[in-house]
View 1 (cartoon, one colour):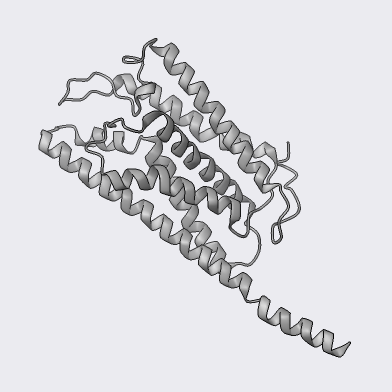
View 2 (view 1 turned 30 degrees about the vertical axis):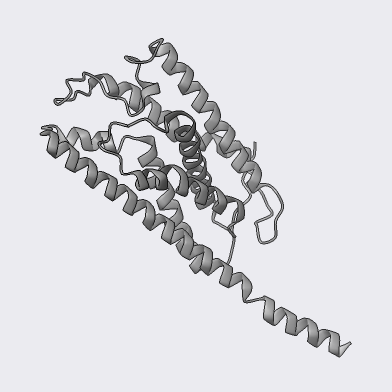
Length: 255
C-alpha cells in the first residue's frame, strides 16, 4: 500500500509541472502572434503611405481613416489585443479565464474567423484600395492569424464556459461597423481618382454592385448570418467538457 502511494506521489510530481509548462508555451505563442499582427499592419500601412505619396494624394488623413476602417484591420487589432491580454493572463494565473476576457476572446475569435472566411471566399484576388498590397501581410491577416486564433479557442487552456446570451454582445461591433461603413461611404471622396464615394470592399459598394443597395443588402445579411453562426459555434465549443475548464455557466449570459 505504501509502495502504491509512493508511486502515485512520484507520478504526480512528474506530471504536475506539465500544466504550467503548457501555459507558458501557449502564452508565448499568443504574444508572438499579437506581435506578428502589429508588424503586418505597420508594414502594410507603410507601403500604403508610400503609394499615396507617390500618387501625390492631398487627402492623407482621409486615407488613413480609410485604412483603419477595413474590417480586416479592425478584427486583427481586436485579435492582437485579445492574444496579448491572454498571454499575460496565462502567465499570471492558473485559473480559467475571467468572464470579461472570455467574452472578448469569443468576440475576437468570431470576427477574425469571419475575416478569414469572407476574404478567402469573396475577396481573394481583388486589389483592395489601401494601396499596393504587401502579399505576406495579407496572408498573415487573412489566413495565419484566423487559423491561429481559432486553434487557440479550441485548444488553449483556461477557456471559460459561456451562455448563448453572449451572442448579443458578439454582434454589436459588426452591426456598428456596417452602419458606420454605409453611412460614411457616400461622403468620402478621392482627390486622385475623382471617386465620390468609398467603401472598403467591392460587395459593399452600391455604385458598382449589379443591383445597387439590393446587392449590398444581400451580402450584409449573408455576412451577418455567418457572424452569428460562427459566434454560436464558438460559444457551443466553450460549453463542451474538457479538463481544466470552468464548469459553471454564467447565469446572466445563459440563453
